[in-house]
Length: 242
Image (tube, rainbow, N blue to C red; front, side, top):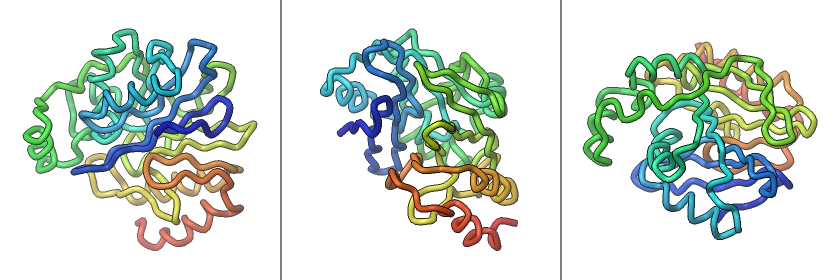
């Protein structure tokens, strides 16, 4: 069930089944008619997302754009279903992964060839399903105005080549995708475009921020993040990220 965690941020937990389903976040005041969705979740979850919004009185039509923290299947998989219901929806993705998708290169979506074969058979997908869906290429340090708040785009490669976080400096809120989670966990670094050394650098970059609320792509959200949490996580994992 969708939860309102601040006056302008809504949290829709993923529904993990055969594969993980990422969390979805909404940014903006519902009265503004100008909401932003962060990530879409796994294939087949479109109806769950849209019905969850309607249950709390949010018309899906007020969602104007989707920002993808990265383009793995559990984050981008539901995009085509949402676009079928909301054809006006813009899709924003970091340029490193947007360029690949626009060329028809979906290796980041599936991560590895064996996974592509399995997912295409499981979900009836075909090559090209996620190409040409990108409307805006995001850049590192770009400042986005989402409804009435400003969010900084942070390019944090490692889990994937174009992974980003969104940072709201005033309230110290970090939407971090799959780079870092609760319980001192981090994202995997063995799929296409991933890099252990880049992930370490990205974690150090996040550790330099003041963060009070951590909103990851999976697992628990942390409303009151303990001081030094990200630094402690980096210290724990650094020996393995070479």
